Length: 304
Length: 304
Image 1: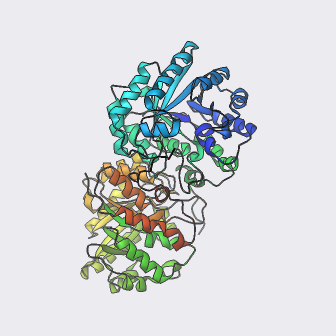
Image 2: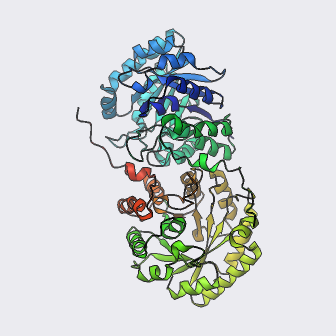
Image 3: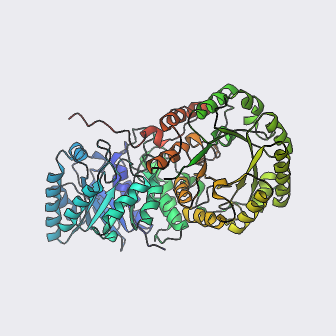
């Protein structure tokens, strides 16, 4: 039995792309409902510019108004020093920084090369550390790049090591565009053993090609015990037909629980939260587990 | 590297539940398109009564009119001796019989106990054998029963062994209502090693709770090398909102190919067939892989 720590990222990674602006009080209620489910961390919002991500322009209000449940780490995405200042003012427990393992993806998304991103993030890590605030760094395209294809595991290891050496508290390996397969997941995690402490490493999967849960299984069996996941599978781009979001939290938790692993999550409660997500974002979200219920919810025998 | 054999079941297990009656010539075109994709087997139709499954009332015509590609085994579901006679008259290569590992599910679905089903199927196996026609038997609820919950692996082994001893050419372990988890898959396959030849055992998964592909990974790694799968994930009940069908063939093949296993499937061709399935059944089918394309389909760099 493994103790699996689950980080819920729907309020940030999920809502940031939604067409509907979710009203601030609904965001707060969503985070509060998630807070009662037993997550290790919740990524609440993003301290980016309101112009870049209008969906999360209310970051300060959301962080201030949520009910903080003891034991839950409330994190937020932070792109730079300015974001760090805002996040720390809003008493974020831990910052989540981001850069890419792929040079072309870093340039396309962050408009600078990886070396410059790395230098800037190390500065944020140092400054945040002065205030006693820990930083995790999410590494995009750790399992492949939509422009370059394969991303060498040695590149991922090099960047991760530089960040950890510079004081980062943890690294998240992100399969940003759903290019991971179970073998690639094992290859990267095996390579990082010895470089990174496995308990400071999080795996962040997307279901773009339907492989997210299989990849989670492979990651668990390679020693990973921290997972990002998104309630109702929110995330990804709602305008690309069929493009799926992050690995679905309730499906991940259900699988791990079926296998006898401890997640600390109240699945019945989480399923009720997940069932309300389509109304939150005002669009249909196919959700097999919400429709079917957990495997131990048996059916009565037919009457005849 | 494993040589994985994939059986396409959409024309039978997929179409049998669809609201739209797919016109016979469209069924034939669908099977013909699948025949060019490289499958080991295709389950073409079902020789049940037209009253029981009106969607497949055209079994004889479909079997007669499809183009038979050398190397592909064309199978059909057969519930009883009458079905066997019809199937053999229609020159089905191999019969697929069915009973349940769970007493209550067998009674609910087949209106008789398992002992009676077993006796009837053994008779079909014998009679078909006289004509030189092989029978596979699909065992429903091998990984759990929606009425009883756990199904003891020893029960599955007992039934499978009785069928193989009686001349069945192969056994398919069916996760009829999506109750399998990776641990349960391994437990059953490990138990059956030594009882059944692994190369006469097929794994048939449903995605009812989103675990189908993770279960397929667990099965492959437990030695399974034959999988049923359904193009575009057809199957299950279209009237239960969110209830998913069989494991999606193209997603299964894509994962195995990403992992370096040989499937013999032309994935690009299969994706084109899958993209046409929503039109065939006149309903939307979310299909992440069809939308995203395979992982090696890279994107051009943004212009700026």
